[in-house]
Length: 226
Length: 226
Image 1 (cartoon, each protein chain N blue to C red):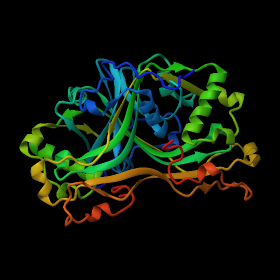
Image 2: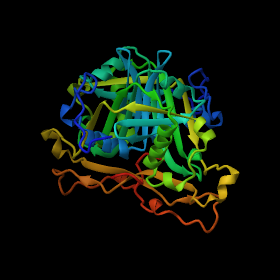
Image 3: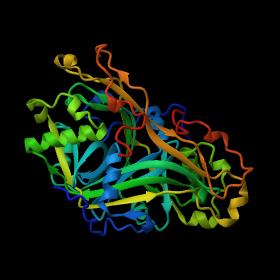
């Protein structure tokens, strides 16, 4: 379904970067890589005209961004009624420390996706979307867990947002100080930041003979840097 | 200005938790601790009736959440015109792996703040707010950098959001599997996640005699767990 090298997205009034336009990207490879590495997205939309921003786990299949939640979730229900949404993911790669407070910054990679979610009501697409979300959070896990029963599928709402109007914004590199500040004596540079995994904590009721799966062995957040 | 033990916030239609109400908190100590630990917040608001979610660095002073950006930033300008906003921060503490895909979850701490931002136009409050934001990102840094010049202050927009309508939501602990799934043989438990700092990278133009400050020596994200 997805071509190997999708065309760059059209730039719209919402996805044209106005400030630091040089940090903007509209090619799908850049956008997809950030969406795939980010664990959580923040989804904004209006309920009765008032803004909400809800953190949600997501997954991507080609040009579809999938979100899910409990059928009873009133925010998710609102999202599935044809309202517009903006889903934003942000990876923080480091703190950029300049000599001047003014030139402090962060290195980051972020994506905004604008679109109107649709309700995924086809059971086959719904199951595939849930696998995509589980494997997004932890690659390999969908095959190593019990799939949803028909009843569990009924209790789960899945929505999709088309990745057709989106932009990425990326800052990299060190601080950029004014020339007259360089000699001030404050330390300057970058403090790299990374989401890392600790030691897996077995469930209280885990049998002794269950082996830790290989996909849990990498101390980086599994899935990052794919 | 802030009492030592602020009263819990009133619960409103927006901050009453409907799903997993046991995960909800409205006391200021819990809300403030999450706001202070989170590096970035996602701010949602409408521009010409359409939703935006923008990642921003924040800082907190008592019951004020401060955000800042360039004067020319059109999104920040929109925010300062009396529109309603929802600022959400999310800390992911771990992946919760159950035997069933359905019972997978994440351990997290999140806060939503609802409010109408005001433009901070008093220079003294603006300077204090910028210090709060710098020290939020990296405690101790405001005193160890050159403060904004009058011109830099002019080029910076600062807005405040009152922390008066807000809620926190927290999930902790291991997976909760259905009884009949426990023997399935899939590994179950929690994979802890943490934002960690790497080795500081000095700026290219950093003089050899500038010493690394003590506040950069902690490998955890500085400021976390305060």
